[in-house]
Image 1 (cartoon, rainbow, N blue to C red):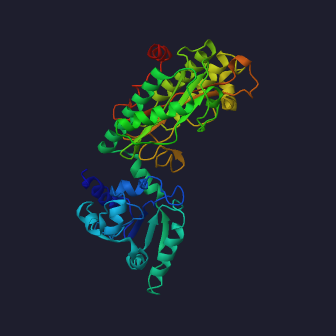
Image 2 (cartoon, helix red, strand yellow):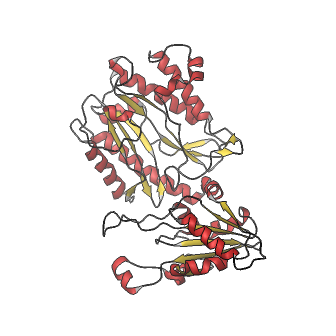
Length: 431
């Protein structure tokens, strides 16, 4: 890995940070599953984006003194015994030589050194509220720094969440290639599942199939808990129990994507367990597919990020009227929000290091406009639970379709189109 990518990102912060300010980014800590067994370590995304460094309990400090960026990092100290048990540590020397920080120190020195580093600065920036207990640490360091000289200016504390998030929002070529790889691995897993699923399988078995397909192609972990929702379970938006047996006549909604070298994919497909849509399932599915295609067409530079949402709502409202699940004028029904009983969520979210990635959705008082390098999901759905006041033939049908869309100079690129979404292609694949 060429770590100059991360050094350049740190240096470019001089365009975003106020002069005479300090940005602090905490790394993640090791999390324990039980008394003596930890979860696999996953670095904080902001920290990783600016460092590429993947050791727990580290801290990054970036100083903009007006002459450029000075970067330093606090890392776990070298320790022969702990490295025998837990593996290699870069230590401060490795952090400078391999990760190209200007300075590096043992993380045991954080509380001692931070007040001195902050002394004389005008503003301290960090992601407020993102790590338990860290807000108080910043306050303590800042208070200690201010107390060193009673005649110095007060030190302001600002939230860096939007600054970092909006930098991460525009993906560079390196990130796009990694996300494309994550999408490709995830797409292949969905295709394998469509070809393999059968009556009597368990949701858990299908989940294991996805995780196996991810892992054997180099993506050890899913980007999020897979949703393997058969029948009415598909009407629970974040269903993750994945413990029911598949029934021949039901649909199966699978929302699953892998994490490849820290970057996420996010794909949803809904398909018939027996390989053939019923009439009612197909009617609902075709509405969702039409809404998805219409929404994707609006994802292009200069358009508001809310255009896909509005387009999908209108298409779904018209479709629900056409099949008799809503009654009235589609325009008025859309204005009143009648569709929300069936389609209650937003059309999508940013995608990157996190499956719900960093970055604002507003610019000032207006919704953001799409820019090249942004990646968004597009995922309309219709959900008809058994508790709804509709004809029994519709009950238990839940459909969502989701693709990952890159905004380009020419329009957009669907990164997950390899997985069939056309119902006839799905049936052909499953036959």
